[in-house]
Image 1: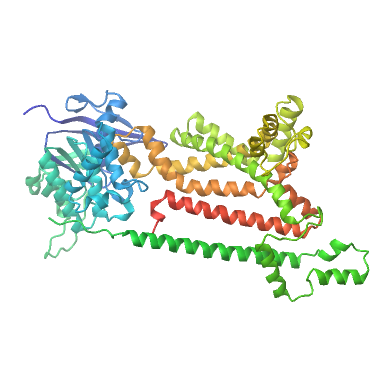
Image 2: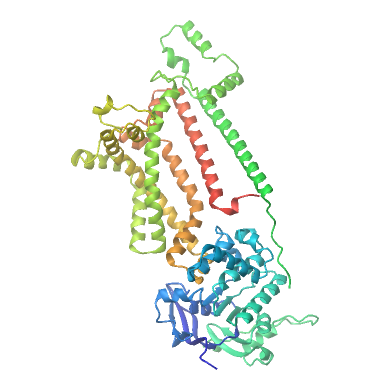
Length: 278
Length: 354
């Protein structure tokens, strides 16, 4: 195997605040090829901040350090802001949680998609429009011509998330970070969006980091799973081996999932122990 | 594989019909507001303890003269009839005669209002053109030196009285340095050579290609318009800053960064474009406020505008002039609100249609 697409060693994200430093991510390490990696954990476990740190989208007040943070051989920590910006959208992209908030409300969907493309490639207006329409079709929007001119508030959540995916994939990135891409959607729509994401990632041979708090979703969708707790990776395992998880936290998470037909008394409670966070 | 079909179709016909409908509802709102305005001014005119008859004939007139004047002015009609006549006349722009100037009130207003509009427009343009970029940059570099400057500008703008700053400016730039023209709209020398056409002196000078008058008018306008501009700048930059901070913390900004857009495009094209929606209302209201005639500024600079006119009339119990002026101001207020509403719809797709 060649060099990994993404190589993260000992990544840390700290937020200095008035009452002391908050360590959101504390020494996360993993490598990623053209595969699908799931990152699970509860709120505040640092999973989203890990994704944002890779893109360089952490808040300016935060300190990001790592022994190694390399994307396709480039050191992300030392390249200039302009170089990093050129990577964003073009080679590494991100799908956010809720299309209601992550699409610009006063710009039409089509123009937002075209904007990504024209930021990274010199294409004519008509060519960009053509490719945006094709992209909308690729995310299974039946009448792209009409949706192109709609504003974000005029479409449903599922449609908005398709538009979001189209906007992020149009420049052909090699790595996609999906930050809870289905958490804001109805369960029925979730599966459609996942199927679209799945086929696009597969077809284009992209690497995918799928951030979620939904353990079952992640295990069915990814090849490998990182379980995060309090800013650390407590366990890394192949998705199919999830049931053989060793770490008590992962076992606790698995234990909390409801089983149809089974009566559970008393309801299991997620245990947390201070030493896991060390 | 399922296919998306979860949006409402918006055929062109329905969109056009909804436009007509919203225009109609606009019209209804305007008519009702205007009638309310007339009713209130009418009511004020009746309850105020000033006898308009006495104001005209004087308090030493014999009783039969007072009675005849009362009859002529229609004060013996029933109140409802009086109101109907009042509305009819107001709609045709007839607010009666000013006791003070003996001109029809409308003629007076046509003379003084352009002076106020000229000043208010220049002030608002200055305030918006400088205030918006300042507010944007202050929000982008939050806590930086520019942010501090905007904060100080805002603080001074809120706390220093305009008449004091006006007097100080006159003292320094007119009396001492003689950089600018003094009080009034134009030097007395030009009174006989310069003829107002529209009442907007700058425009009139351009039309007549009277460049020396133009320069003189500009030098008179400079101080008061800069002063009004400063105060609207203080307000607009503060508001722009807070709207921008709100927009910059939204998720779509993160998404725009993830797309690899330049910071400049994110700030000016995405965040400001969203902040512009509430900004329109702020600027329109501040403009309307200036159009009411900034009495203090007009007094300090002896600016023959609407604010000064109404204040003078009020002090002389010239009710026709006061009510006429009030109605004109109210109408302008309604018009500006309407305009900002329309702009709002243009800027924010979420308020369109439906």
